[in-house]
Length: 429
Length: 117
View 1: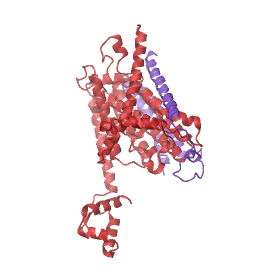
View 2 (view 1 turned 30 degrees about the vertical axis):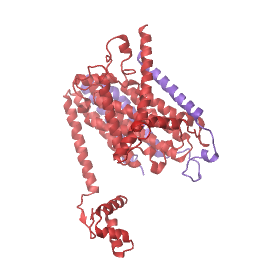
View 3 (view 1 turned 180 degrees about the vertical axis):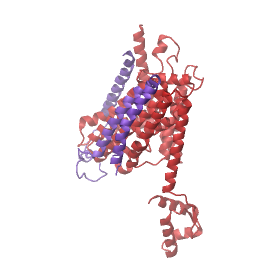
View 4 (view 1 turned 180 degrees about the horizontal axis):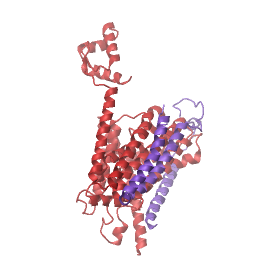
């Protein structure tokens, strides 16, 4: 067989494997996320279908396939039909330049090169990912707009504004890494890190943090999942979708998560390398998978931990904090490169900015919410001073005796139950 | 150019996959439409008025800002790649470019373009 034919067959095999792997990972990510979130919330999670619930994704998929496709009477039919497909098409395409290993991972023969563990190593790799992933907004906006529904339209508009706001910060925070790597090729960036002997996280700590925040917003994950804010928008742009075409959107979201995690692993954490431990065939892919898995777990961790932020906070944070900081990071890196200073100056600068920023944030937070000593209440509850309302109510109940149960609880000093109530109420105003 | 053929193959397969899913879901899914089912979802109440085809101008402002800064990013990336060989000349270019963008940025900030009420 000629070399070209081998290359084509290799590319075809790799594409089928990548799509199959991404879909399988998506299916099991949903299961893992549900199990992990359940553990965070002291639940068990889905464990009925198969051992450890391993057949749950299969059951979900089958159920989805047999659901009715509802096309609302107000919807614009054609756009409504293709919108989820755009999302998932874009998400799958963006994965093309992510390298899972070196060019010579399987040896030096023609077949080994044709089956190198990435689909394409194009010389504009990072730009390709930025360009393709910014198309993802089309799937969401067209889906929301064509549904003919208030919630969908609002969710789609929010999503569009959010994604374009954070995309600028993504590009600018990656530019710092590109200054050190001097190439846009993903494989080349990993090689640059091997040549420097360090991971670029050490050079660009600020850039990595900015990228992490902006990427979380870009893939609409908590705490930036405003487009799907169920308390205000039902399900955002997903409201009118049903069955498998609904799960296409979910699929796109999860595949985008995998892609942004891969970019973080490749640009900041050395991709498939781990010290000298990348010589054995097959091992590089393991390192890559481990790094991406850690980032995916952090996504779930964030979702379980942080409350959703408000929309005006989101936009102001993106434009007034992230964007100036990423320009600052870019200029500082440019100074280090232009004067030929050693790389650690850039790293120290990034850490310094992070420390100063953290201190300013902490000071502002303390100014708005001063630390107060908990005070002993008359009825024996240990309450922070900020819980004024509950304090008065509890007193009134105790004196009037209108509610025997609560006053009895209070007088007996049932601290755990009553103070939990108090904190809940205190968090609300 | 040969580098891009695998990318095109992946795109083609992804396209086939989306068509396949759409077909599967229309073949297997039941079709029992009722007027209530096809009505826009409004949490159970009847729709008072159809969603407007217009939207708040804030989104348009954000979109225009995005275009400005995305063009900036697209221009800065080649400069970033060449920073090693351009040295101080590259830095001067970058600073001039950044200043040109920071001035309107401060202006629109003071104008309140980032205040979402």
